[in-house]
Length: 88
Image 1 (tube, rainbow, N blue to C red):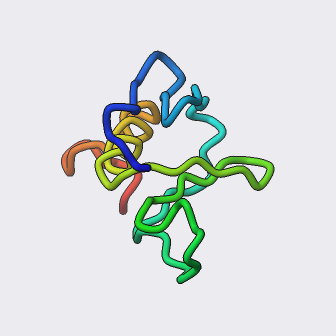
Image 2 (image 1 turned 30 degrees about the horizontal axis):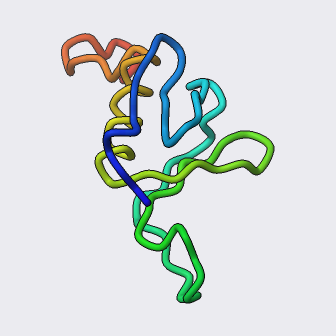
């Protein structure tokens, strides 16, 4: 279910599964894989990428890591230590 080849970055969008997800819609990304214990669960072992309006997309650990990296890059990333003037 969680295949890494379904993750594609394109401008302000990331393709996860068959969905082009706007980066600005991402609310949070799970740090641990989903586990609910239900036999019929399709997302067991996948990582949740939570979107606005209580929607979610699911991906592999690699998808999660790529989404985190893309979001950090899109937001400008964390500046190097010497460039952090805002820290007292």
